[in-house]
Amino acid sequence: MATALGEAISNEEPIVVTGWTPHWKFAKYDLKYLEDPEKSFGDAEVIKTMVREGLEEDLPNAYKVLDQFNWETADMEEVMLEVSDGASAEEAAANWVENNQEKVAEWTEGVE
Image 1 (cartoon, rainbow, N blue to C red):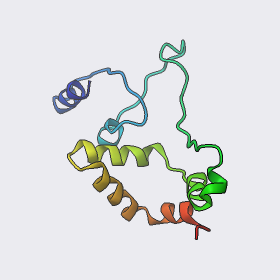
Image 2: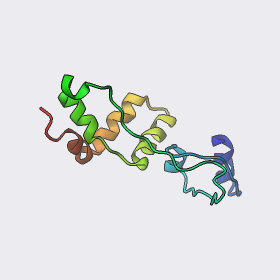
Image 3: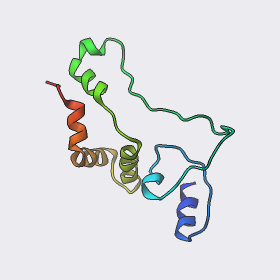
Image 4: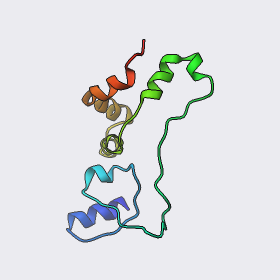
């Protein structure tokens, strides 16, 4: 899918591919979703943070960071694109953190 998409875009040819969010292709290309009024591909899904029972009591700072953690799809796709372009996951994450200190500060606010 990604190879065919890239080739079609390079050749300025129309193409329809399956897609989901988050995915690096949305950070790399100007794409849009087609209408799906019959919900052939299902409803929208969500990504949520889950923790084990008792984490808040055992590790309150870790719980607080996870509770305050929130990022947008575009943030995820930025990291995914960097990994797709050859960076390690650790390097891409570190770069994102370095470039998004305000968001990270919100996640860690009140953590001791």
